[in-house]
Length: 280
Ligand SMILES: Cc1cc2nc3c(=O)[nH]c(=O)nc-3n(C[C@H](O)[C@H](O)[C@H](O)COP(=O)(O)OP(=O)(O)OC[C@H]3O[C@@H](n4cnc5c(N)ncnc54)[C@H](O)[C@@H]3O)c2cc1C
Ligand code: FES
Image 1 (cartoon, rainbow, N blue to C red):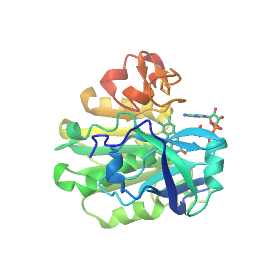
Image 2 (cartoon, protein in one colour):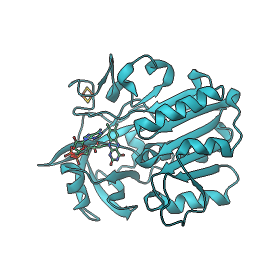
Image 3 (cartoon, helix red, strand yellow):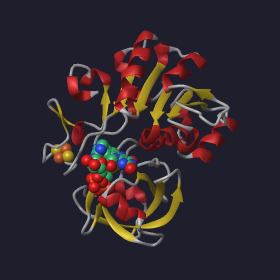
Image 4 (cartoon, rainbow, N blue to C red):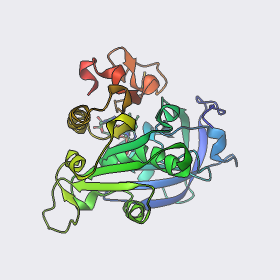
């Protein structure tokens, strides 16, 4: 696992096993490799991404949303935004297209082991973080407590709703969630921005690693909170998103200071980017 047994430059044919609608214009696609092998042969890590390649439409980087511990299918959660994602949404069960990858630096699993995990997700940021979350739940002996904080803008926009609801029945994960607004007054949990959830639990900054993925504005406020709570900068990781083309460090589209988001990221330790002004 994680040794890149596949050739990352090679386009691999995949087919859609299932499509699971999430919220408006967001779909979970379950994929299988058309060459008959399982996803073990892909060798991905939580936090990595693939390039989805659709003939005549182009390519788009999409995070892998399933963990390498579940190799029967690879899952991606896609928001319909433009040429490639529209084409994907027009496909159904059994349709085929190509992918290449896995790309990028994922979450630092080895550094996270034996720590408590604080996962903070905003909106579609849950898609890559879910890969780490399910990995940690599958390998529970390697990790201490898991806390998930997830914020969306309103109650209609909760991704992976039923999976998240099932976490309330588990004692190996603490799940807190928030919505920015609840105009209809139907939300039973916290209403406010995701940082408000920090006041609803006790965190021990000495033995917890924080990992976040969401919109850039969220990072600024979550970072302030974490530093205020005494988290060491070495224990903070974040996944960044930039416009990408090649995905393999050749075109320069995804530059953040002297780093390439596609190769050096998308996951960065805070210590690596804190002095790069345009990073967050
Ligand atoms: C590392 C990485 C992981 C990603 N993971 C996912 C994922 O899991 N699910 C998902 O739905 N999307 C994800 N994206 C975003 C996705 O790649 C873009 O939305 C992509 O443009 C979609 O391609 P398209 O051809 O459908 O849209 P396009 O025809 O390219 O048009 C999309 C619109 O969004 C703009 N845009 C393009 N790229 C970005 C970007 N990175 N950020 C903000 N705006 C952009 C374009 O300017 C255009 O206006 C990820 C991006 C990166 C870099
Ligand atoms: S996307 Fe081309 S260098 Fe990163």
